[in-house]
Length: 194
Image (cartoon, rainbow, N blue to C red; front, side, top):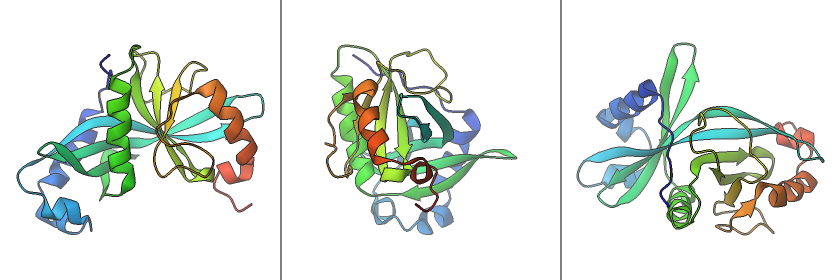
């Protein structure tokens, strides 16, 4: 079943395309894969990045939209990603980066495309566990920039996942949140020293 990728704000996409066309931005990015890339690069698969702000023992959550992430492709593979953030002046390019989450995100998206139910893909960051997950939201018409994980949504931890949590294995939110609740204290979740 095809994924229903939410549309990114046009200024966010424009800021990434402008950065991609800037030799200085690409050179200063310290992303060897992007520097070595042959041929034109494109920004694809915009995913809203939400941060899990709060999780309670009874499963209540709150999230904050941190930005939009675009996979940067050359040819048939992603070589980097670009993040955008919302500033007082609107959406702005933040950074290019590479690493294991790029490949892991691509793999998780390919796995999600084989599922029978349609989903809207998002990313969910759990800072207290240094965990990033593909969040497959069941409401494909929802605003990708808003909302919290629904009980029937799926979370697919990306590699590298925290110890004891299998990467690339889809979990219903109702199954994974209790595991996270026991591992993350409220202060760790907010990024404060424990």
